[in-house]
Image (tube, rainbow over all chains, first blue to last red; front, side, top):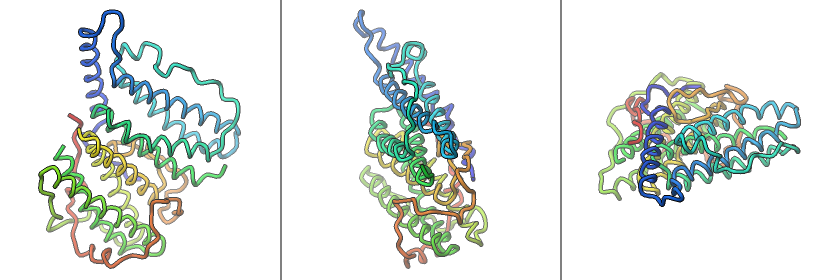
Amino acid sequence: MEHTSGGHLTRRALLGTTVSGLIVSGCSSLSSGPPERKPVDPQVALLGSLIAAKEQMIALYQRGTLSGDATATALEPFQERHAAHLAAFRKLLPPDAASSPSPAGTPSPAPTSAVSVKKLRDAERKAAAGRPAQMATASPALAQLLASVGACEAVHVMALGRLRG
Amino acid sequence: MADALAKALSAEHAAVYAYGVIGARTSGRLRTRATAGFDAHRARRDQLRSLITQGGGSPAEPGPTYQLPFEVSSSSDAARLAVLVEQRLTTAYLELAADPDASVRRVAALAAQECATRAYGWQPAIAAFPGMPGQTASPAQSNDASETTDVTTDETTEEPTDETTDATTETIDPTSFASEPSAAQ
């Protein structure tokens, strides 16, 4: 497959822009917020919800691979791409937010029962459909990342349609 | 972000022409796919024109001369060109996704998803971050562009139209395909 190359829109540039913005916002919050409770940066809150949703998607795929058959093997690259999305979201968190417990809060339970490809496909479709609304309040760099992640999820919907299970 | 809108429009102008060529070099189901792509890009082109006009700008017209990035003499070449067009457009829409206007961001997000899925329809390979430079797309099932299935629900099943034929009389600006987006400010 042809690769896009040579562009200035590097992930590093995107992430760097957002992280800088988040750090500046965080410092501002420290100086102006009430002493007893630091206000939550909206971007950090958004990232928290994005991370939580992506963790749930990965947990769903873990259940999708429980069967151990050929379909389970085919699902592994999908899960890996979601893990890459999760890592990209986490990178955008400022250091203080990244070191504290995730706003995602609840840890994912151990996978117990398998899920169908159809259920995974529905989850992907829902995730992709929700990206435009999330982008509305995101920083410019996070909005670009979300557009790319949503595009990947939309492709997943198509690709899962070619799998049996 | 007016620049990002202009870049996206320029890329859509080129895509409309490219799909005319792609349609002329394909047949059967691939021709149908090319026609659907042509119609989709023409619609996005018109939408971008409207956005630029609404913002007080003047949308650019297609360039007088264009040049394809490589010779397209077979259906395989046509599929390769289609993938390239969709990938470059995905990148253009990622740049537009940083626009301060939420409605423009929405257009960019949806268009990026459409471009990425069309690229997959031509060549079933998946990148974790479509549109991001330097992405490595892993083959999903087959790299044979002729092995396409009809899972692209957004695509129409219309026969190629006269407009597709007319579009082949235009030309492609290679800079539209080679344009590089800038990072969000």
